[in-house]
Image (cartoon, rainbow, N blue to C red):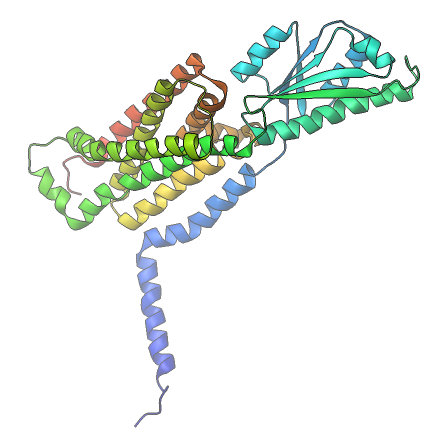
Length: 378
């Protein structure tokens, strides 16, 4: 009679050998094991950055003076700022509303006189749609202006008693209280629509391939495009219910204002939902494996939407290659649009541009998905 535990090593060795062979045969599992860490380190390594570089700033000088020119020179000397002279506050406000600048620095008519008297004032207006960037930019602007005028005061240029002291009057547009919830919730709507859309459909075609039911469908007169549209339709309804819940929660639970057109919000959100559903459907048809489809859907939809869409980090701070890659991600175009519609209002040019891009993605993904369900048995 063998002692308890004898043969344990042999059994364990045999089981390990069996599992090793099974793992080697399952290439999709191996790919996930090797590619997931690589993808994550590249995404986080290049995507994570709280720095703000070359932030566009409109500078308005009502009355030119030596002190005002030195303020502009100080801003130009900062590697974090890209100042741009404009002729009036109306022009600067227009640029801020369009998102072409992130802040306005306004030196009023009496700036030089009040500065010489020790009570200079500089108005700084910040774009609060991205509250993280606005806070960082505020610190850069305050530091640059104060430092420049301090140096001027130290040199004794125009210094009466108390000269060199400047009050920076700050205002934040579109998110007046710098409420982080207002900044995060519109972005969360994008992430939820991405996750729900891609995962709802990422298993549909793969499941049918694994069960062999798709081959049965091929003997019917149904066409590939009809298969794609039929699989898409029910999940559009589910996604629209999810979208409605997100919008109601944003408005009622989190008090996030929707200052833009509700019609524009609904149309653009529906187009983005269709793109996300088609992406999941294409992945499902291309992989023909439920496990692989779920992993690929995670890597190609949710992670890029989280890291490369501008949800958390300003895309201007990432390397140029990553910035180009971010422009390929559909969520990048919807993220900017939905934040603007929630907090700033309706910019119809932006709505048209973003919807055209999303429409292009929808057509491309429909074409690609249709090819994955062609009546051909490999």
